[in-house]
Image (cartoon, rainbow, N blue to C red; front, side, top):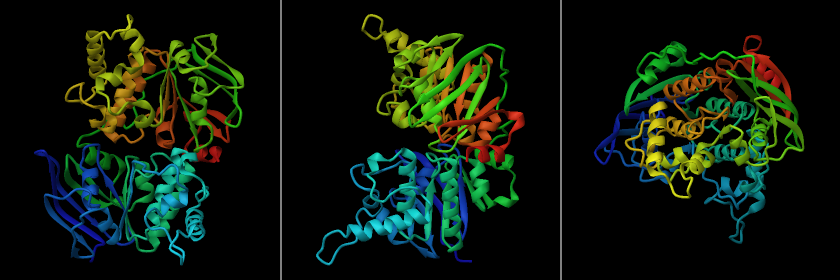
Length: 492
């Protein structure tokens, strides 16, 4: 059988360190093939070689049986290979249509850009994908999730036969993900080959038909997803048995740690009320744009509510800015750690101490020994894997970066932990470590509110779940009285 793409013995080292020791892969026409592996497994290096970004040290790449060598992404595109990258690269002051057709704009007979036909083609593409975006909108006016949808449309506009999708749902909601899956199925029916990279195993089992697992830079195994159970796939990915995917050791107490009454922010959320007990993990589920993140923005002083009351430990509080939220014991782990959770160019130590600078510099001069000790404690407590804490945080894996964000807030001994997509872009092994951190905090009497667009995660970790729809609460349910189907139904 002729494969759309066949890779054997791929190797790549950087500075004598092997990033990829044995890359092996086969993609059939009409297949959605999941490429699985933890952070550092070699997936990104593998994709970059196939896209012509890195040169391979050894191995062969065959496209429909013919040996190929790509000097750059343009060569890969010319060969019919496109990629939807995890990291967004929009041109903010250009329109959606201009971003989609950047560098290949249609021209008029006089040599200028034919904006009318370009806008028409872009809008048709967006409409076919059922993405609610206008082709004439400027990118800078879109949300992160909408930008991700534009990246997806851009890759599909190349009419490629092989499409790599690297964490394509990491910044989009359940409804947009279902539109993407519908588009993938249409491409599959046309005989295209899709290479789907995701840490979300529920998505993999929903959309893919086959899998390949990499671990520590090497091929581990491949096969049909119909022939493997989820625990077995996890074991292949992490190289060991995970006792349980979701860690639940906390037990809610009778004391209320956080109470929100009739919270309203015009055009964002309306009449939101809930209470969370100490020791409880309170989940919030909803589609993109349902008002989930906007609740946290109001609680943390990033948005100003027009009405409502916030009570912490039985005392009413007024929060108009993040400094006041922090003073009242709130901590916010944002949904995008690279944009709003970390200073990527700074060190691990500096990032851990970032939210505690007043405490670490009481006389307007940094207490260096105190900073070193604080960093050591958080790295030890959260098992952050870093060669040294003076290295840039950008050099860590996604899981370790997220643990640095958690360490930054735990250094302040918070009362209430607000978690927005706490395991986004994190592999299954690191996810379990983060679940342990969350449960340990709740077990010690902390109050946790967690937003997650992963249904399995919100059901597996939450004691109670509030469903958001169109800026309003659609109800609060215990984990025992709801299921995935009910959550999706309530959120739509």
